[in-house]
Image 1 (spheres, rainbow, N blue to C red):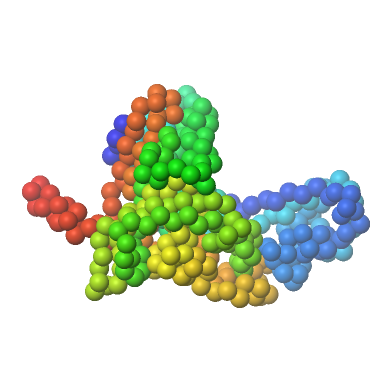
Image 2: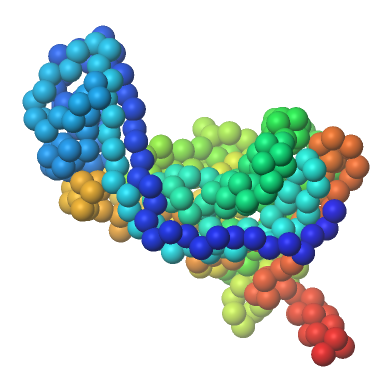
Amino acid sequence: MASTKEFGVPWPEFNDGLSYHDVIRPSDDGLTVIEFYSTKYKSSAPLQGWLQRIENEQISVGGRVVTDPNTVLRVGSKLVYHRLPWKEPDAPHMIKVLYEDDDMIALNKPSGLQVLPGGLFQKRTVLTQLQWEANNKSTLEARKTHPAPVHRLGRGTSGILLCAKTKLARAHLASYFADVTSHVGVKRDTDQGLGKIAKIYRALVSGIIGNDKVTINQPIGMEKYPGVAKGLYVASQSGKPALSVVDILERNIQENSTLVQVKIQSGRPHQIRIHLSFIGHPLLGDPLYAVGGQPKCMDCDFMDESFAEDGGYQRPTKPVPGDCGYYLHAHKLILSHPITNEIIDIIAPLPSILMTAEEAKEIAVAQQTTA
C-alpha cells in the first residue's frame, strides 16, 4: 500500500573498516607476504602501499600479525588484511517509502546514496539503512523480514528502488528482472508489455533530439578503466544486448536540452547513461560518458602510483561511474505483485528539473489551492 513513511539514521563519522580473507593455494606456495599482496591485489595498492600496510600491522598470517614483508607463505596459510576504518564521502541518510506491504518495500532513493556496499562506500548505503530500520523493530517482526534491494540504481540516480522483505518475494522479484533481461535481443514489439515488470525513467539530456521517439538497440560491454577494478561498462558491439525506448517530452532550444522518458527492457549497468550518450545526447551534467557511449577520458592505461594514508591508491582524478551530477530519475514502476499477482503501480515524485512545463504548472496551482 502507498506510504508516507520516512526513515534514516545519521551516519557515523567513520565506518568499521574491512577484513579481507585469503587461503594460500598450491600455486602460491613459497611466495612472500609482499609478493602475494602486491601481485594478487595490485589494483588495491602499489608496492609501497602494501609495504606500509604490513608495517602498520594490518596483515596477519595464521592469526598472528606479521611485520616482515619477506615472511614466506605455505599452502593452507590463512591470511587476513585488516583495512582501517575511514571516513566515507558525504551521502544523504533519509529515505522515503513509496509503497510497503508484508512482502516488499519500494523506496524513493535520493541522488548521492549508494545502494550496496562497494568502493569507498561500505557503510553509507541503502542496505545499511534498511538493516538498521529492521533492527529497530520488535524481535519477532525483525526475524520475519530481511529487507534487501533486488536491483540497483546508480549512486547519482534518484527514484524507485524495489526491495524484498522475504526470501520468497526476493526470489520472485529477482526472476522478474532476469526474465525481462533475457528477452532482450528477441524480436518483439517494443510497445508491448514488458513481462511482469516495467521501469520508466525521466532524464534530461544535452542537445536537441529531433525524432519524437527513438529505440536504441546497442549492446553494452566492459573495458579497462583506471580506478574501476572490474572495468567500465561502455557501448560495445561485443557486449550483451540492451534495449531502451526513448520518448521526447519537451525540447528546450534556449538551454539546448531535451527532457525524455525512457523505458528500459533490460537492466544493464548505467544503461540509460550509455545509450543516450551513444546516440549523441549524454545526460546533462554526466561527468563520465561522452558521445558514442564511451568515457570522456580514453587514455585508460594511465595509473597514478601515489598512495593515500591507508596505503591504497589516491582517488582517481578521472571520473568514475559513481560520480554524480547528471539528472536521471526512476519515475514509475509497474509490476505483478510477487505473491498475490496483483498489478502494483508505483510512482516516485519528480524533481522539479525533470518536470515538463505543464507538470510544473499543475504542481504550482495545487500548492496555491492548498495554501
